[in-house]
Image 1 (cartoon, rainbow, N blue to C red):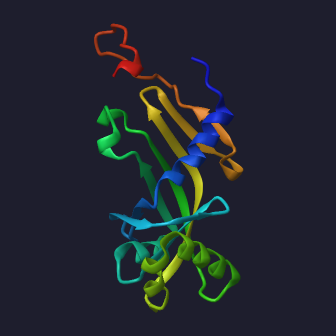
Image 2: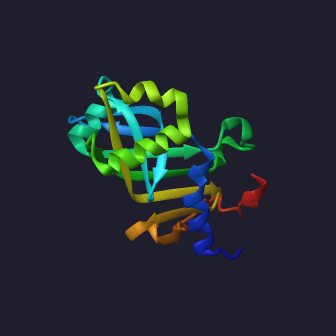
Length: 179
């Protein structure tokens, strides 16, 4: 099978366009994990969430400046749940100060994407805009089709082959497409 790295990169970076929300992983100062989700907008290669400081993930972002995000195909649309298509990023999380031009630009995107659902949140003092800037990523299309995205602007893509999947008894594996 021939793999076109640039085509895979474009596909991976376009994948979040199918979603309105993302899954979030964060950790507190003691390293305790927290999982959540939030509506997002994409802008200039970054992902933005508008979230309340009354919830754990916001405090975690403020304390650690780190986040993991995940986009994944809906289970109902997945034939094999072990080979679910997904894209994850390790991100730097940075608050965008209210009243700045970057804040205004991204808030306009939230209005365009979420309209009447976003408007009431904009006036709440406990809500903050965070930029989740991807540092590296992993795009999994299925068995044997995992790709690391790295480098400036996630411009480098690497097919993760390593040892690969193998049977315990040494027998050949079935075609991954058949799994």
